[in-house]
Image (spheres, rainbow, N blue to C red):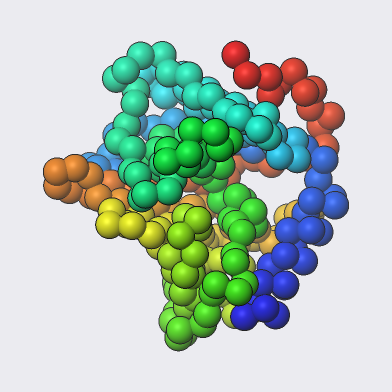
Length: 233
């Protein structure tokens, strides 16, 4: 297991060495009970641990900012807010970001992780609390199935591609599970092989299912982004 995690960490370090900042343009599509609705264009700015996300939707614009210590999400009105999933440790907001916070500890930092394909490289896999429990094919690719026994991890199970050493599927912990797929891996001039599509499927309350598809449309790196872009308001 350690060899696998080290390989993934190598790729992440390689990306972090090459990248000072990034600007990603993402298209998001939502299917609720197989019906299409609420498309959005999402722009994601990263500068090391700092993140800014701008989502333009039919009902308004949503902005999420994390300065590396705390975060905030602004909404045009209450109608834009979607369901939250609380798994006992973190809040997952099926909107533009996963809000990483500990509601049981008000003094802990509340950060955000962009919901976009490349964020898969920033997943932290606790090597001493993970184990391979089998093998499966995900979209035709051979993958290890890894169980994670760590209550601080979003995912309780991950599928790791045996050739790419990349996470291609994840299943969250808790009662209300969210399944995430990463695919359409392509070679890029600056970042190597990265996924261009991420799919998330989760249950709606009290019944039904929702599928969200995030597709990378454009990637720009090392733009010299200003720190003012990540100031909380």
